[in-house]
Length: 161
Ligand SMILES: [Fe+2]
Picture 1 (cartoon, protein in one colour):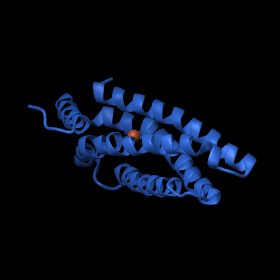
Picture 2: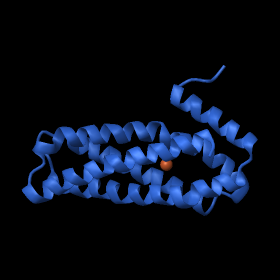
Picture 3: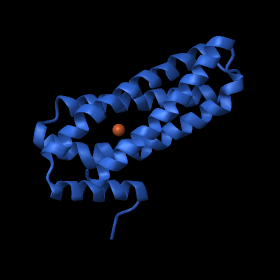
């Protein structure tokens, strides 16, 4: 497997572990009817997701998806992945805003947190099982090199010399 896909699969493993934590916090809120005791944990999750949205999602969108579009067209799997990225960006912003409130709105937290939980788990499953294996089949070694360069620049926040 090429280096970039290895990084993407690892990122997904890490995200799934974070989602298991999120699920525990949401269960706590449902069981106890209050969210204050898990506020800092939810803030920490929200920050994790914000960073993933700024790096991993952008790496996929700018390094991988454009090359895939050249091979399989803009509709179909790439369009679905991009729509789900948009959905997750909205949900993360909504959850973050809820966590800044002095009085926590537990119903809204359960709604947006629950949405992130289900959308992101399914999204990762689709990328792992469909999109990444497809990418491995259709992209050339040269294209992977190009993708890795772009992904590296996104993570570094600057152009490679
Ligand atoms: Fe991903």
